[in-house]
Length: 457
Image (cartoon, rainbow, N blue to C red; front, top):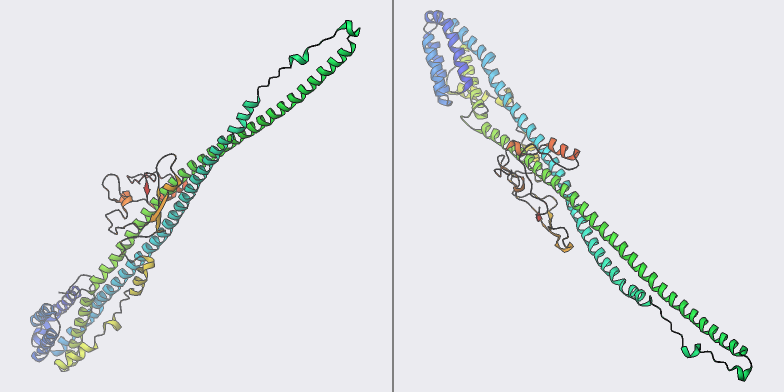
């Protein structure tokens, strides 16, 4: 029996009891039969046969031959009580159903906004990480260029430094024959002229030696300067190489932190998406409950049926009071006059809002994969990988929308591979991570794949 109909039975029984003594001695048999006939007709039209049978039983129990006025008063009082106590309950149920629709749509709207915002955040984190690794690769290229420049600089020291070594020793041996001084005093009487000639020869020899030494020194200095310059260039190139290596190492650490931020953002988005889809499913469940006949508290067909039955009953009882004809024609008239939409209201099912909230831009909850930037890096391991080992591939990770599973494979807990409630990073976790410069100190067992082992995320 519909829930509102029980109230009607109680109302009719109460008034029947209060007037039974008077009705038993005063109500005419024809009026009593009219009530029974009215209920029988309603029973043939409505499916509430059990409910109407109980109404008839109560009527038969309390309505006996007597004064018509007492019956009319009883029926009028019953009608008034139905309108006062029973109809408001149906209207309250209708309002409660509308409130539940509004509540679930509001929850879906909030969850959708959170999911969309989370997706934007995850896209940003993915893009930031991708660009970071792109720069990391460029820095490996810079290291390789620096290595080539260093190797060339070292090679460039060979010739000038060898020349410096080759030009370092200097040896001069005078011509002994030219240094021999000969003078025959007996022939010349003295050696003054010979001495002058010898001194001029020695002076010429020393002048030539000085010129040769100066030339050798200049040649050695030139080679030494070239060698020193080449060695200085090696030092410069070594500093450049070391600086490039240090910059790459720092960039690598930053990218690892950005990778963690990226994963947390993606997992948080996944959790938000699951929550949004859960709210969407709750709305659809409510719609199914509203549309179900012989359903529960939200059943709209049941509520319309209750309203129609009660309206027909009060209408037919009113005709009894008025002394009208109780037949199928009057029953048709009473049934047609029942207008639930006008008297109770029309449910706003928010179907347009639901459609907008489950558009492809805001996630339909039928997604199998999620695309962030659509590409990812394969990051090589090691302390000195080749830049060519950094490669890009398409990236569209599979997503699970079940609330009791990890949204993405990399969001699984180390223990069981599934995300319990405690295993889902919250917004406060993200804020805490941001406040610590990217280090996430999670109070639960969430782990993330090391981003350089090799990274395929």
